[in-house]
Image 1 (cartoon, protein in one colour):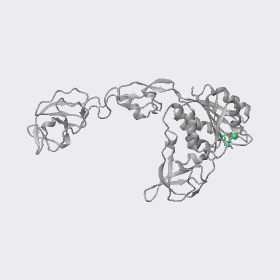
Image 2 (cartoon, helix red, strand yellow):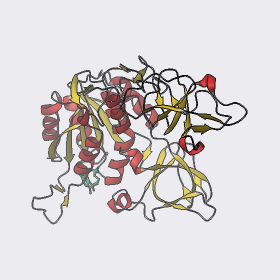
Image 3 (cartoon, helix red, strand yellow):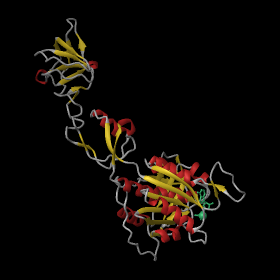
Image 4 (cartoon, protein in one colour):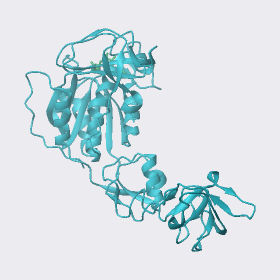
Length: 418
Ligand code: AMP
Ligand code: MG
């Protein structure tokens, strides 16, 4: 089980920056160490548990990179074309016979180089004369068009590192090594609650003053994309004791507790008090907009992150606070998404000292540069603003205004929720 030290962070004073908060959280969570073995076709998206050293070189044997004719490097024509009689033929998947001196061997892409040869002429670059000999032009360097054994990956090289979140190309590498199974970190167990008396679950009756709970499904979907095993724990009412009991009950069985709603300072925001009554509150305010109130605490050694209820705030704080925490718990290196520089096509004023995320579309300007257009409305409750846009413009703590043409960093959704 993931453990978190529960000495309380002294809060008060200015709001904590996102980077500080994430660093505090990351320093306090201990990565899950339990390992399981999965078949290759189940390995995509999982976290590799141990370094993987190449059990064989890639390619495993020296082979031709093209269809053509293999010759000995010492016999290459230097000044003028020369005709070579043909002796032998080797295709991909066949064993090659040693080459005869003064002869060329017909060879195909991927076929092993016949012993003695080290250079291949592309078939497009040669002609066959009347006597059936292959006429090779001068000027080719010894070793041309050959893929030496191990040129891709030498045997023993650490080809994949522990903590790597496996991608399709990583799975391909394991397959190229002939492996059928990989050791990965077991999925993180994450419990998700929504909080709020105004919420009804989709499929249940909705009273006139209620809205359907959308955050829980967004958060669960994002967690699943990160490879987590998610417990859907439904909706907790706005009441401190039932909240506290609900969290306490499941803490020991999970690696992370995630809530949405109820973290502001309103009278009906009970998450903070609930955490304080059954655990320790570590921090609860962060200089991020949309977002701001984000609670972090520990209950029975299990970290809890309480996200705000407004859907856009919930999305933004998931991406910038929960995602790095999940990666830390999985033992994966921190991988902050890298903003792409684009030109702002909007004007914006902001407060110094906090980080802001502006929802936007991308378009290509007349001069060919990428531009970010701001979503016309700003409310943190507008789901349409997430559905209709391409990503978030990141405005750092020191920025106070944006003018059209300024270079800003753009984070596409595909990079944020992958
Ligand atoms: P809160 O953070 O609890 O003050 O909630 C702020 C606003 O977010 C509320 O007015 C709700 O309309 C909305 N909200 C809270 N939780 C959810 C949820 N799970 N799904 C959709 N909207 C929510
Ligand atoms: Mg609420």
